[in-house]
Image (cartoon, rainbow, N blue to C red; front, side, top):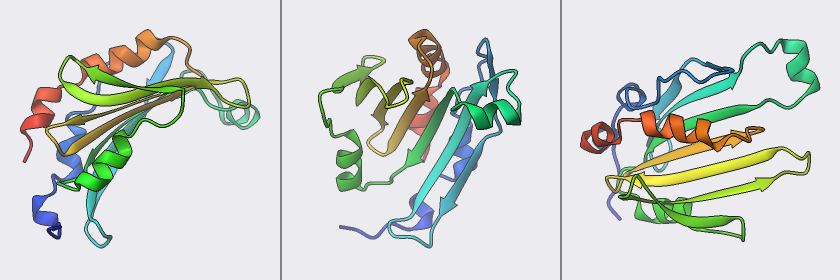
Length: 160
């Protein structure tokens, strides 16, 4: 396998331009975070935004698990083995999906030990960008879909 270098990764700030910016009722969009890491093997670039419940204070957060939706874009370069592992369906709660009719992926919904609804959708764009949407404590899948639908995946696919 060819060794990946920082030159072939898309910088996390460029990835962040493809994250959703839409407003969700009852949620606050957090600051975008990310990194382009070239000192690890394999190198990777990642950008994330988290939508958390509005009107929550620190004391309430400490007493109750948060309700949030996180969207992450990972540039995995051409690491086919890692991409295959991330898209592998495991367990009865996951299934294969085609996102927006063209992007292969998987999704799963389940209740965790605390009774919170958890949802994951992971899909591949342009054979290198793995998009992950994770939610917990959110029963309204329309909110998750609104975030995903607001993403410019065509723009992401064209990044080099």
